[in-house]
Length: 251
Image 1 (tube, one colour):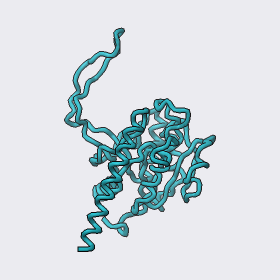
Image 2 (spheres, rainbow, N blue to C red):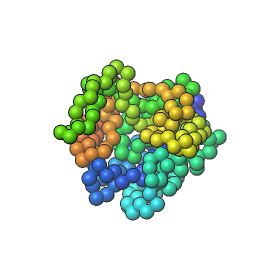
Image 3 (cartoon, helix red, strand yellow):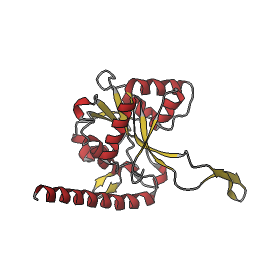
Image 4 (tube, rainbow, N blue to C red):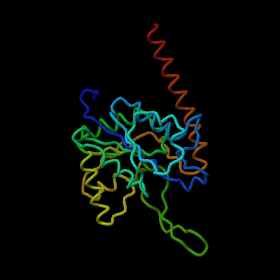
């Protein structure tokens, strides 16, 4: 699907979290990965996608780190972040005109390795289906349900993995539907873990679009080391592709 046929799509990145599991003195989105903050990488990959028209960034009101990044001078809309991710997303959605941007794509600030091809696939599949969807990966490991015991966590049983998926981001939905679903779910006291959970609660279909497993979320200290490795591999892949294209044009 060409850019000329795609309706205007807004992007939202909630970046107001503190990332307690990262065990860092600063929020994880401001940790450095190959010379840039994680947030800069994530924003850069979203903003560079040709099918995305505008970006809303939800930041903590007292954020002391953003001004020192290269993003401070970028043409992005900033909104106040909430106490939880869902409130940050909703604050951004309230600022987006659904008539101008009928679709909205939400991406985690701590997923700096998202591939352009996966974003394109998600957009194309959702537009063809006529409803929203998420990037996801099929569960490959044996899944166990745990139960707490005095000696520690014990296995309560094995969960059938055949229909289980790891939910990733981006997640793409019609702007008005997502805003209404989140608002109604919060009013009803429903716990919203991601955009898809709000749409599921509202009875809306959510497409599962398989994405690359290297689209990891940096949550714990070891994830940063893994992200650096994946970043290097992606860069090598890109260099190899560009070399192939150059050779094809010169032969």
